[in-house]
Image (cartoon, rainbow, N blue to C red; front, side, top):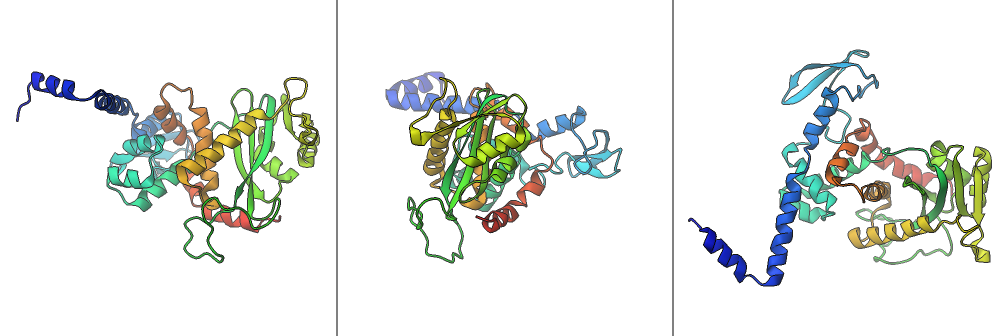
Length: 344
């Protein structure tokens, strides 16, 4: 059936103003999606332009070594092992790669797993696994040193076993509180650090109160002589600053000291705390502690991509930087067990 231009124009004019706005928005969304960079093409270009390295030994010298089921193979000149464009990245072992670009777009739009399953026609478990492989790839991106005034403070999430089918306790209702007063082993400490230049770190530290070791594990390798640390008056931060020989400005909230010398404060970090908790609560209705670090990776990347002109392309580039993603993905369960068994 042929539809003339006049028929289309008459139909569009017959729509209400609200319906016209919805149609325009959907057309704009389709236009944006056409600009999505192919994750597979992007990865192959990285290797073909000699910007990658061997995922087995890290050596930068390798040559093309044939094709395997449509995947470009390479051979390392150092360890002589073979690898493909996907080895070590979150793309390794993923079937239906033709859906990857659309999946990334839907994930960037923060669509639910149910919605993604419906739109792409994949199993919900598949959608879940793809999400966490991608999030595992973001763990070590943008790990630059904190420069200048750097704020750090901890926040707490209630220990959650969401999704567990074998609870050893009675399940909680959403929005419930800890059964113990104060900071206890029912709460997960998350250390959030940010400098004024836009470098971030979000780390699941431990159950209960943080220690000097928690801070060292979180940001110890990102401190430089130029770092000026602003924190609350927790003694662990003081010890950390002394050990690393950096300038430290603790704030005494008990004395209503929220800003020191007009410039030293932790208000940016506290704002991140609020936005992070709101995002996790409203978008996901809370997340399991097992996967909390994954969602912290996601939130950190959201903050980094806020002012990027092509966020999808940049997201693809950053997710493909790491060839340790699959190993990190399979360590999620182990990391969770270590968190639960760590001393309080």
